[in-house]
Structures are given as C-alpha cells and as structure tokens.
Image 1 (cartoon, rainbow, N blue to C red):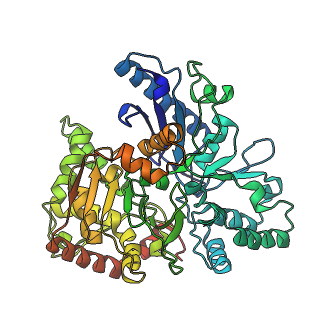
Image 2: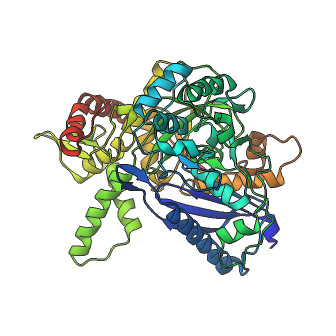
Image 3: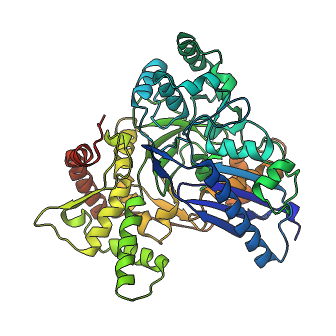
Length: 528
C-alpha cells in the first residue's frame, strides 16, 4: 500500500494518548496508545510538559510498531497528520517559547471569580475551565508571569506548534478558549474589545488577539511537519518532514466528527474521565452557567453540557475488585472484569435500589463544587447488591451532566431526537447506551469506532483536509464518504428505566449537601 494514501490522527486524552492510522476508505489500519494520568500538584491538576512529550513519542512509537507488524512497512511518511487534545486549560509562553506557568487543565476549578465576572461582562457563559477564565483569574491574582506573556494556547495547539512551528487552532478548540462568532468564523470582536479594556486597566501592553492562536476551520492547511517537528514526534529519525498537518482540534470537536454529529439537530456524548453532551443548534439560547456555547470544527454553534467527572471513580472501584481477585490468587483479564461488572449493572433496579454515589474526584461546576471527594452511601433498607452498586456508579457518572441536559430540554426546548455515544464508557456493548438513553429519554447509537473516539475523528479531519473535493463541506464529506455504510447499534431505554433514572436523579440532587459537607470537612474546600 502507499503510505501517502493514509492519515494519522493523534489525541491526547485525559487517561490515554491514542493514535490511529486510516486509509483512503477511512478504515482504521493500525493503532498506538500510551496511558497517563493527570496529577494534583500544589493544588493544581496538571501534566508536566516532559510527560506530554514522552507520552506522545511513546504513543507514536507504538503506532509505528503496529504499522510494521500489520502492514509490513516502516512508518516513514503519511499523507497527513492531525493532533487533538483535551480542550480548555491554560498554557502560557514568553517570546522565547519558554513556559511561564504550569499547565492548568480543564479539571481545575480555581477560576470562579474570573468566570463569574466575565460571564456578566460578555452576557455569555464563561465556564471555569475556559482559557480566558484562567487568564483573567491570573490577572486578578496579579501573577507576575503575565508581564512576559507572548502567547496562550491549548494542549493541542502546543503540540501542533512543536510539530509545525505554527501558532494556530481549529475553530472548535478555539471556541473553548474564547467566544467565537459563527458568522465571521473567528473570535468575537466585540468581546475581544471588552477584554482589552480590562487589560488596559491592569496596565498590560499586549492585546488579547495578539496572544491567542489564529483560528482555522476544518479543511484548511495547518502547515507542514518541520524537521524539528518530525524529530519531536519520532526521535529515531525514521519519520520524514514535509507532511501536511491539519489544524489542531479539541476532543469535543473530534468526538462530533467521529460520530458524524456536526449537522444542526445532531448530538453526541463523550464519556471518559469527563463527560460532555454536544447538540448542534441554530437557535439562540439564554445564558446558563451549566451550558457552554462552542462550535463544530466547521464553525457551527453547539450547546455543550460538560461534567468534570465521569469514569475515574468507576475505574478506582474496578481496581479494588481486581486487587481482591489478585489477593485470592486468581488471574483475570482486566478488560473482562470491566465488561462483567458493567454488564452486571443492567441487572440492577432502575433506581439503583436506594444506593447513591457522588463520583467527584475534582470540583464540579454544575454541582456548585470547587473541589471533589468521592462519596458512596446507602440507606439501611437499601438493596445492597453488586448489580445495584454498579448501576449506581454508572448512573452517577452521568448524573451531573443530566442536570444541564434537563435545562436544555425543559427550559430551552432543545429537542434531542438521537444521540451518538463514544469513549470508554460505551466500550461494553449495550450498557452505557441504555444508561445514557434513560438519562435523555432518547435513542442512543454507538458506532464500531466508538472506543477510539477522538483519535479517529482527528484522523478523519486530516483525511478531509487531504482528500476533499473543492468546496466540499465537512458534513457532506462525512455523510457521503465516511459514514454512508457505517455499522452502528441503536438502543432505547424502557419507560421503566427512564422513570427509575428520574427517581435516582431526584434523590441525587436532594442529597447533594452530603457531598458538600464531605468536601468541606474532609478536603477543606470552599464550595461555590
């Protein structure tokens, strides 16, 4: 086969860095991965940049080895490359390219004051995790590194910069840094001017647009892999420079692409370490603190409900069960353990039999929490079974997100006809689908590529840049060339499951003070 007829998508997720190689038929040919985890360092959720570099190289090396094993060739070149990563956060640099502060990820909830003031100033919801909220909070805190600030970007933007030397960002990722005008397909000029007035008040010499990445839409060229960039990705020197690189995107955008959910009225849910629901809409919405307005990689308006916490608590409990199995001297594949426990949840009662769980490893803006403390509890007469236990954990993983979803449906009258699910939460067949369907009272579909999610979506964006026809829109390309014959399964929760979920959520909301007390007394956090 010709490597020039392939494309690579790489995504730096919260627990795994993943890479996939696709051919011109958009079929995955080879995979690579590297496991990592964010760390709470001096009160800040972060990843050291050395681990970003090392993890990226390890993931690429794993992909290259898989290519050689499956295709019998060395990975010397490809037609195009694209990089995606977790959205939002704070990565500031000076004129020499030196990092000025630790990488503050989306998971941090330290910007409440800034987010609130900017939301009022813009009349537009600015969540705590957005880059502009982190920047303004640093201004309010009078952090001295701002005097040297020359550029601000996201994790995907940083990696792309190292690969190409270009400080650009796909419009979907850019929409999580600063509000976007979907008519101009650029940062909202009125809001930029309002922020520049804040800069003038503080005496900073730079303007906001000067430090933000240049906005690009899907299909445009994001530059080419430089010699330094090729060595950054592949220190062995096998990978050649000159490869076209697509504009870097955020994980929300690549999730929409991976599930073909970029047309108005379509939606998807990504569920892994965090969870978020995306619905493409052309209707103006009111300002809600739990609903973000971002864009697709093509620039269309998207309503987003984001929860900082999803599967971390489940992973911890499955790890405990695995430790028990090891202690008993038994051997059991961890993937099989996950599948068995997930499947057991479908045997549980629809309302989880009186069990409640709060899966907050970190703060959760939807719940009004600036810090997290996982809490599981039950009433004395609860049906304490393994099935109910696992169902309660799977339900709690999406419960905070459902609070925002109910606002979309009940207050803004957003109609959800069908959702696509992707991410680790949906890897076990049927389970995650049924739970999510019971949450939104709508059918949920999962494609065969759901587990790879964003890496595959980024590969598709790289392929779109490389193989699209002139004036061929992204939605048209995906419909006709990628997903025309896509294999998926669709499930709809029963009325009993939907009713049970509503009962569980009612108790979940009513008992939230339990979680707040746990945070205040055990963690010492001050809640919003």
